[in-house]
Amino acid sequence: MTSTEERINIVLPMAKYDSVTTARRQWQKEFATKPPAESTFRLVFKKFTETVHDVDRSGRPSLGEEDVLRIKEEFEDNPRSSIRDAPNKLDIPGETRRRTLKQSIGMKPFHIT
Image (cartoon, rainbow, N blue to C red; front, side, top):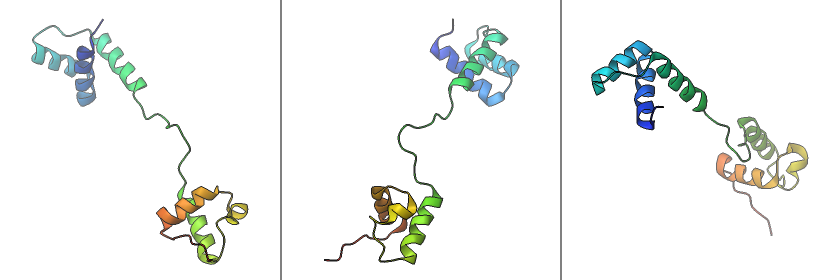
């Protein structure tokens, strides 16, 4: 069984050279020992590439550019439109509309007294 340090020293040259032979030669130069078998290099690198990938994030998805544009158009076309009334038209939650207006679009919601 290979240790974590050995696995790191297998994965890095494999990623750099994309060749088992070159990675094994690099191992031999660096450590002056017989490198692990070719199959070990392939297996360790395969496991690494299969398990390390961009995983979907948990939580709510971010608002897309389409939705930001829809909110912007709604409030530019109807400047007196209420944030509370917009959900019926936009189908976007109220707090999301308010945050988008303020942060992404730069508008400041206000209340007339």
